[in-house]
Amino acid sequence: MMSPTLKQMRYFEALARHGHFGRAAEVSNISQPALSMQIREMEAHLGIALFERGPKAVRLTAFGETVRERVREILRATDDIADLARLARGGLTGRLRLGVIPTIAPYLLPRIVSAIDPEGSGLELDIRETTTSHLLRELSEGRLDTAIVALPISEPGIEEAALFAEPFVLVRPEVEGGDRMPAREELREMRLLLLEEGHCFRDQALSFCDMGPRTYGLDATSLGTLVQMVGAGMGVTLVPQMAVAVETRAAPVAIGRFDPPEPERTIGLIWRRSTPLSDELRALALRLRDVIADDGPSPRENGLVREGETLSDRKPRAI
Image 1 (cartoon, rainbow, N blue to C red):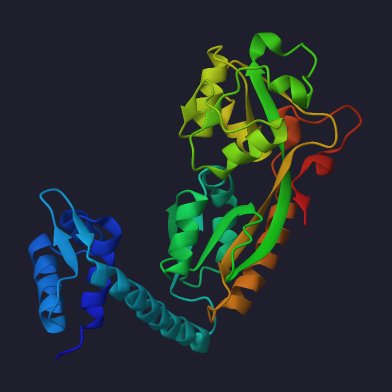
Image 2: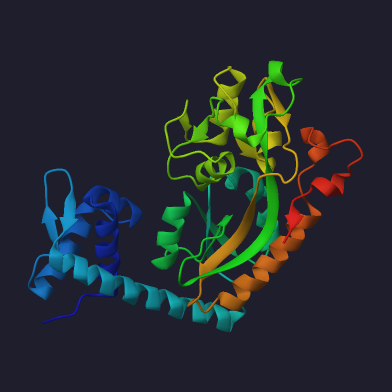
């Protein structure tokens, strides 16, 4: 019996992940007939079916589920060999697969891209924007090198390095800008607009307001949508400070800060403890921490500086 090739195992993992020959072929940069042939050859070599084929989707057989765990281990080990070669060539070279959650990516990435490769040494950034749960799965499967997320993650096998802390602010209709800031418990009586399920920022907002996971006025896919709906008078929302300058420019809203202790989140870099790049990623976290501390958002432009407070007081708080 012949063993499956590494190429076949990568196609197998893509098909297992997407459950559809067309999507698996697209992400694998191969034609659908060619991918289908490789899967059939793999099954023929093993002498047993790996997938149940349906009219619209495919799913793993019980044997296929067992094989997938082994295939993931093999692919992770193969990627680790590539990382070892990168280290031998001098550290973070070639492609760096970076994941970022949606409530960070539009606001932080432009400032840190040059910091990741300050000398233009040819490091190629491959950026993936999705929710924390997806990033964790892709990290564990070896499809990402590192990710920027809200901490803590507290997952076994994942290393965390805090970068900075930032506060949440209240966004409400412009006509309410002169009203006093509501206390945390008063937010429970307001129509609070939130991101859809799956976004960690939604959970953080609910935790601050001490609310259960009930349904609210809007489940949005982006902070921009939340802010625009607040401007239309649908309710109020919370956003992280880094998003204020971008998302409130064209919306008739007022921004307010809570009395101390303010709600806040900690942003950090995460990676697999087992990766050979651990030392390099830890050094990258330190570099990003310095860059972000030196180049924080201008809270005066955002209207977030209290009387007697300096600009540096409202930069992201270093960890």
